[in-house]
Length: 407
Image (cartoon, rainbow, N blue to C red; front, side, top):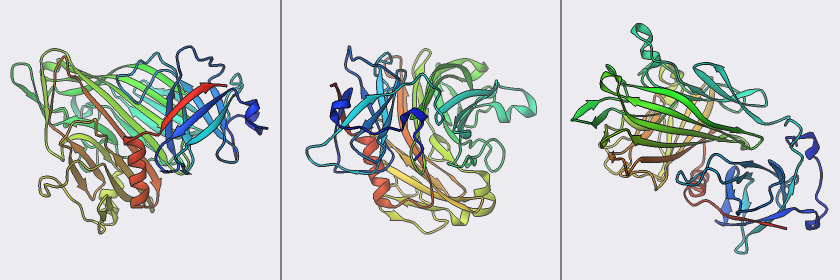
């Protein structure tokens, strides 16, 4: 098994060699690829940015210290956190104890994330020389180039480095990979704009990178995005954070966003097809394979080519998860969309066989009440089963309880 650092091939002789211990308590069944984040207690002696946790698995688990992201958007970003990814586990009532050992991080990791600016309008997350995710953030242009430049979005790749999402152009050019927007926005003196299709002056504009971190377990980038309306005035600012975890047999992406008004209240509205947080698969799905798209939901797997949409089906709301299984390059994938109870409700879901799905809500943001969002996307080869999808949802909604203590 490849273990990130050449210096990491070692076995623990017992708990006597540990530097600290981690206690885990949680659901009886944990799916493979569950990410755990623990905040270090104040004054904890952090000796490295990398550690190994023994107690489960033949080779232990690699942990990474991070300092500029937190699953709770209201958390203190100056706090240090330990992040690691668990294998599939059955947890007893007494929990699980892991022995932690600090590793030498002076050497460059052979297998670790990197984030680099490929151009002034595109940054890329890479792992082991393969692209994982791209943040596409073109500068707004005029004329024929405007369509491709009016909002930033994220592309997602599979484990082999194959792109599975759609960019500008194709069927419905406003659908772009992983994206957020609302077609009916009201702000100021009853000014109405469309920050989904980005018509007229309206557009989303990347401003700057706020933070980046990367390592063998996780990579994250936080960016400032201006939401511009009539006369290109900025009526809201979004801090958008993407977190990518190194998981086996898939890609796990967390999308976090805080949208703050620049002045008065902002009403966000739309419809299921043109508002909210969405995922759009490659345009090949619409061109060739839409009849093979299968939606898998908490109440079962649908037939190929079938879909549900609110308000045609008024019960298609507040789903804890929804999964779209689609075919690109003769290969079947599943994108699992995980909602969080903390996101605004009612969450109204939309599905399309051509490869776009997601949900939206109606909400008002004010100076004292910004919009806070948190979603996860899981991408895997083949179809996901309902039990696993449900376990992944539970791991996201009710994170495993974890604590860390010095030896």
